[in-house]
Amino acid sequence: MVTVKIDGIEVQVEPGTTILNAARKIGGEIVPPAMCYYSKLKGSGGKCRTCLVRIAKNSAQNPNPAPKLVASCSTPVADGMEIENITSPQVLDARKGVVEFLLLNHPLDCPICDQAGECDLQNLAFEHGTAQTRYEFDRRTFEKIDIGDKIQLHMTRCILCYRCVYVADQLTDNRTHGIMNRGDKSEISTYIQNVVENDFSGNVIDVCPVGALTDKTFRFRSRVWFTKPYDAHRNCPTCAGKVVLWMQGKDILRITGRKDEFGELENFICNTCRFDKKNASDWTIEGPRHIAKDSVIGQNLQINEKKLSNKVPDYDNKQRLLS
Image (cartoon, rainbow, N blue to C red; front, top):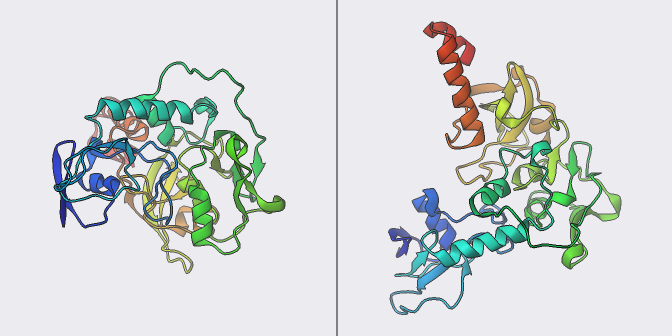
């Protein structure tokens, strides 16, 4: 084990662990944001640059600082290393610049985007964004296209994190979509207008950090904070069958995979579980999903609970309404 210090907090990790994963062992605000890195996808990371940190001390043998900021998702730790994340003004200033860069072409359509309330870029823009942009040129735009009967691609919103491409490469055979062209002309697209149709194609929706890939069966049906998430499972021959049901009353509006505290899927789920099992009778419901209190969804649930507490003095009746 090697000992590293991140923002003054010591942690012991295995040799070869990246700075980002070492920070995740500590948790909380110490963890750098990550828009492209995904621990379950080989080769991911190093593209969005939101996880930049400063190495104040390279190792116990080399006490000199690194000459420039490094991507924490792809930089391994060394024994005695000292890293600065939120304690470094240089890092915060760089992160502010990265967010401005990511928003150069990204449209400000959060009010109509299905990803609103779950968008990593929204959170980054709130924490590090600026009210104005220095970009004076026209934003690039693309027509919406269907890449399958259940998935719609809004390339205008895409930040080219490559997550969906890695999912297609590593979970499925005969990948039919990828990055086309180069530079500011780069775009996610299907080859020769093929559609994405395989058993695990829906996972590209869950791994997308913005609203570029959306579920056509859920589009515009409801805001995510107006739904209640429940953990559920079924005996599925194709995948683990462990999902989150997003419900309004007894209606299942959408189904997603279960995500951990870092927004990464615990298990990839098949399209049958995601799109075809929309009846509550298809599932064994385990109970309400734990939602972070500081999230948009968590805040709305707390507001509803307070309203019920004020309106329904009878405890049994209140519990009935909450369920």
